[in-house]
Amino acid sequence: MVLLHVKRGDESQFLLQTPGSTKLEEITVRVARVYNARLKVQRICSEMEELAEHGIFLPPNMQGLTDDQIEELKLRDEWGEKCVPSGGSVFKKDDIGRRNGQAPNEKMKQILKKTIEEAKAIISKKQVEAGVCVTIEMVEAALDQLRGAVMIVYPMGLPPYDPIRKEFENKEDLSGTQAGLNVIRESEAQLWWVAKELRRTKTLSDYVGKNEKTKIIVKIQQRGQGAPAREPVISSEEQKQLMLYYQRRQEELKKLEENDDDSCLNSPWADNTALKRHFHGVQDIKWRPR
Image (cartoon, rainbow, N blue to C red; front, side, top):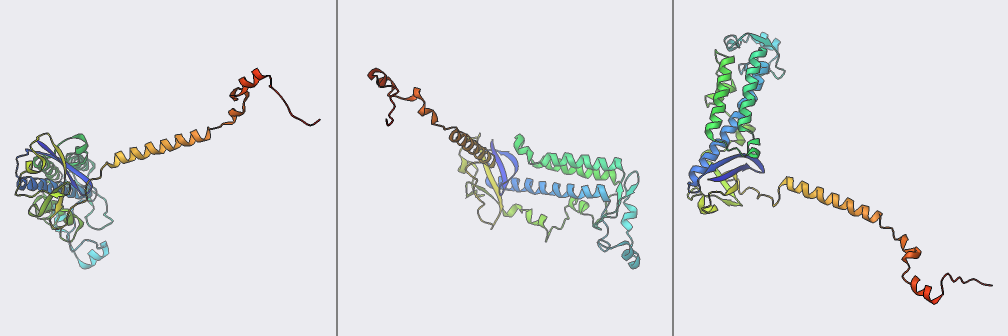
């Protein structure tokens, strides 16, 4: 199995294993699917953290309004009355004005937070350092865990306009957002290796050979964005170690220069003509005027 270390730009994403004989069409779709699913988990985790702190989303026509404005316009949060967390709610005002402030109690909040941590661990970039490959099944399992935690805390469900529910139903609208720019459509995804595009019509072995123990770094890119930057000759960690080595070496040379004292050469024992003068009887001759 060839091991693919998937990156986006210079940032590690995940590891994926595949036979070298696999068509790059299939590999590219798999990589894009896992990549986008990980982004979905990240978005849901971010919104669930807000859900645990400030409750469900307000209706779009009430978001950003003050209590006085809501009262003046006679607006009503009907879904907020239906979607009550298990065990009752604790009021915690959302300063941004996106959520209704009816947060779950401490026990329910811990259920959400624990599930968020577990889901983040599954898709974490630390999995690359640990040598753990991430599959679409693992990411879908993380999504199921998040969905289950929301159902436990909110048995009546979430409002149809809540971003968490939209994400679970694949109805999210990411147009005009930074999150939308990060998503790569499967049909427009490209994989690059050593500044070469891995064309979908070929197999992986056409590029890396038939050695199934090969490990390569591939970069996922949106079609039309051009070739990504090549990998540096040495990693950032190796560069740091190299700089530390040269810094220590300079300090050592500096100390040697400070200790380079040649005044000892004026000592009698350092005179290489002393023996000759001893035998000639011309030691300790001093010249001075009479």
